[in-house]
Length: 153
Image 1 (tube, rainbow, N blue to C red):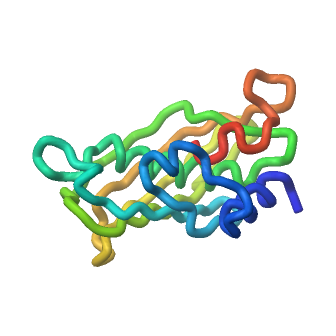
Image 2: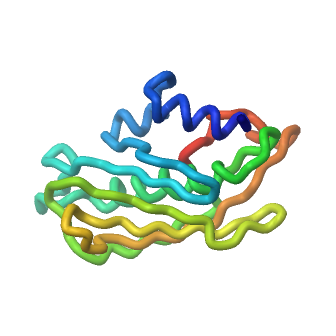
């Protein structure tokens, strides 16, 4: 099994801890397949902004984790990645409930790829849409080649 696939399989089984940011924010990797990842987060008052809605940066963090994981799932063992750019559209306010982020790689080039993510609420309504430009890093480049170092964004 490739190193990245093994890492994600261990996280899903509970044999390896999720990245610290996942624990901090309360998001969970639900599934991963080549070029696709799904995360969930149970939004509550701890995620609120002064208006009582989920703070936009947390929605962006959820989407970024899904997009980074989707991109990493298609990398070779000697590669890792970094995010070059994230664009986020907030479409519906959220106060509480389970949020689901589904990310898919749209285009993967030799070095740069495009990933998109849809975040939905418990009723399946789209609450946010994101896109990310990712850079593939190879062994010997700064940050390149270390499994787990940048998994999930």
